[in-house]
Image (cartoon, rainbow, N blue to C red; front, side, top):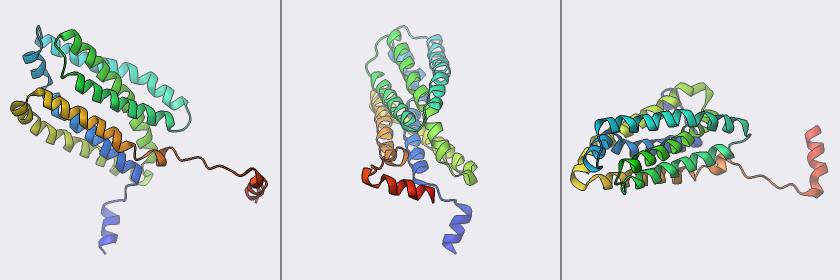
Length: 220
């Protein structure tokens, strides 16, 4: 009965989807620490920053991301297989981690604008590649459930991170928050490195002496 109950109310999620949900949770939870506080950081710590500057930063991120991820997604769709998707995913995560660490060193608004642009490039690589692989591996019979688990886990992670982000910043400073954000992005990339054997299956070598056997087997 317990097994039957679980299969009815909690459909089984395959390993690839589980890893991708965990990786996504870590990334968004990391940025959940800093995003609610980012405008405060800019106003308090960057010389010459104004409320208009905060608006420009939001525009740089969202406009850059929406423009750049379209050609990236078209390229990923054009190339067969998941190798390109996976590499774009990991590179995107590393770029977002680099951006988080870089915010620890900025002194001028020009530097903040540039790092925000780099952060947008990272997410433009991450979003379509993550979505492509995740979509291919979800169970079509439980697609709504698996997308809901993904969305709920991310929402929960961002909510918890936001709850503690302000506390961490007030006690330890913004640099610690940026450090946590960057480390979680790197950790997310490391989690996904456990998946390649499933996403990028190893090619089996065929013994030339047995090619005839393979052909005959295929004709049966």
